[in-house]
Length: 206
Ligand SMILES: Cc1cc2nc3c(=O)[nH]c(=O)nc-3n(C[C@H](O)[C@H](O)[C@H](O)COP(=O)(O)O)c2cc1C
Image 1 (tube, protein in one colour):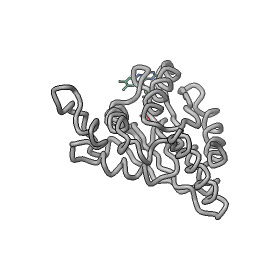
Image 2: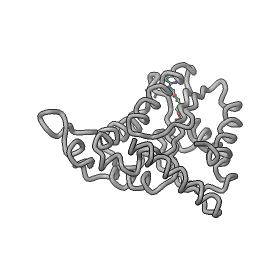
Image 3: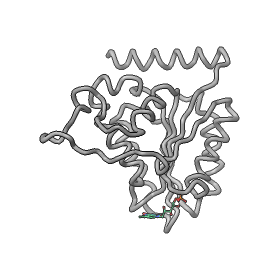
Image 4: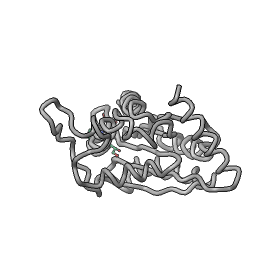
């Protein structure tokens, strides 16, 4: 009940901001190692659409950042993620979580590896999911709108499976998924148009 009110309040505040002409702050978190590859093309189209809708965008390439894997600090497999909603590792995780909390919407993009997320996005989201099990960690993330993009650039298989995995972990963190888009090499050009349109209309979606 409290959660529903919180989400409703956030939607109302975002709508007021939009009516007042304030720009929607979005961040784009990418798990590709290639900033000119197919995932970058897909996020580029989405960003173009978001900018058409007057959103600001800031991009983060996880492979260029220091995002370590969860250490499962305690004997029970947990750590301060469970008790305090924070991670003990001193790297770029904390800064990126603050960026998410400070934004109105987040795009998560990944190349499809073995029908799943890339290792860099997996490392970040595995830790985020843990901190979001605690109310303090979840605060500022719960109810935030997100879009997922999964790009299968090889044979083209596995994008739908990857979207399911991405959706599952983002939902567990508390994000509201506006869309999770499977893309494959064979339909990339058509999907670019769709992604641009999703970006353009994103601010209107709940
Ligand atoms: C370890 C690994 C696993 C991959 N698994 C798949 C796959 O399941 N399906 C697919 O279509 N492409 C697969 N690929 C190809 C990538 O999806 C493709 O290279 C993608 O375009 C990379 O994104 P980028 O252009 O942003 O680097 C795989 C690539 C790697 C390195």
